[in-house]
Image 1 (spheres, each protein chain N blue to C red):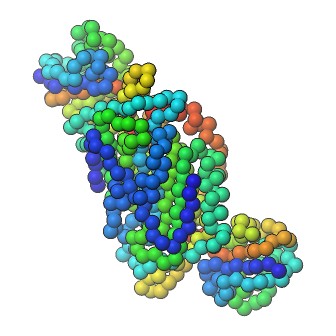
Image 2: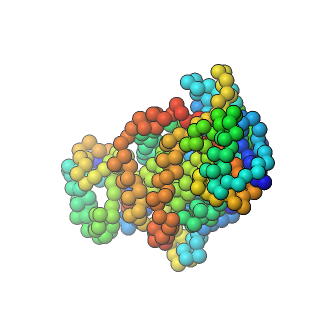
Image 3: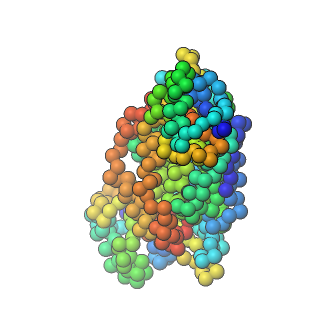
Length: 167
Length: 167
Length: 82
Length: 82
C-alpha cells in the first residue's frame, strides 16, 4: 500500500505498470487519474493545490485502511500532487489491485470520493479573469455519503470468488 | 475510440499514458485491467481464450457506441486478448477519458460488464487436474442487467459540469 | 445454404468448428431442433438449450430470431470474456 | 498555548498561515467564537461557520470536539481535493 503526496509530476502509466507486477492472485486492477481541466467555458491558466503538510498523508493512509477493511485488496496506490499545475497535468491517481473487478472498482471510487471531500487539499484556479478558490460541490458530498449506508463487509464478494476465474 | 482484439500482450501503462495525451477538456480517466488469476485453491497453468473472429471487434465497437450514447466520453480504449495466456498476464483493458469522474467510472464498469457476459469470448483453464471451460456466473449477468434500469442519459452529469473544476 | 459456426465446448462436443448446412428452418430455435434431430454428437451438444447462445450474421440472437436470409449462424456457450 | 493553522481562503482572509493562541475554550466551537471575538479579519473570515471546517491534532473535527489537550487546531474551507 503506497500513499504519496508530492509536488512533482508522476507517470500514470509507469505507476500502473508497477502495481502488483508479480501478483498472480490479482484478477482485477482499477485505476483513476484526475487531471487539470481547462474548457472554453472556463479556461484555466493554471491551478494551485494547497494542502496540510503533516496531516495529508496520514489522513489518506487512514482512509486506505478503511478501504482495506471494506474490500479484500491486494495492493493500493494513491498519489496526490500539490503546488502549481498546468491544464492537462495529472493531479491525482488511485489504483487498486484485487481478486475481482467489483471490489477493485468500488474501492477506487470510494478512495476518490474521499479524496474529493475529506482529504485536506484546496484548489485555486488562475484564470484570465483572476484567481478563485474552487468551491466544494454538493454532488461530491453526496457521492461520499452513499458509502455510509453500505455495510463494511466483503462477505458478498468472497461468496463467489471460487467461481470467478478472473476480474 | 479504439478497439483491439489481439493475441499478443499489451503494456497497460503505455496504453494508459497514450490515452488523450493532449486533451485538456478531460478531468477524469478511469481504467480497468483484467488479469489471469491463479490462486492456491484453484491453480492454473495457463488459460486459453477463444473468440469469434469477425464478430468480436464489431460487437465491442457497438457497445462502445452505446457507452458514448449514455455518457459524454472524450475517448475510450478497449483491448481484449485471445489465445494462450499465463497467470499474471493481462487479458483485458478498458480505459475511458471523460470530463468528470462519475462518467468515467460508470462507463468503464459498463464496458467491463458487457465484455464479461456479451462479447464473444470463451475461456478455458488448463490446470494440473485437466482443462475446463470457465462457466458464466450469475453475478456477472446481474452486474450487466443493472444497466437496463438506468436511463441512457447524460443530463445528470451535464447539470453539474460547470461547477466541476476537475475529475 | 448457411454457414454454421461452433465455439468453445459446443465446438468440442460437435467435433467440428464450422459446416455448411441446408435448412428450411424459419427461426434459430427451429434450426437448433433440426441440428438436434441429427442425433449423436449434435443431440449431446445441444441437449440443454438454456446453456447455449446464438448469433445470426454476427449479431446476438434469440430462439425466436428469424433466419430466412441469414448467411451465418453461430452456436456457443454463454460468453466468459473480460 | 495551541498552534492554530489556517488554509486556503481562511488563510488569505486572516492574513497569516499560523499563530500561537492562548485559549480557555473547551470545544472547537467555543474556540472559533473566541477568534471571531477579535473582530476585523477574524470576524470576516469566520462569519459563515457553515463554510468552515476544522481539524484538531490533524484529525477532522466538529464544533463540539473537545480541545482541552489539543496541540494543533486547523481552520479551513471545505476540502476540494481529487
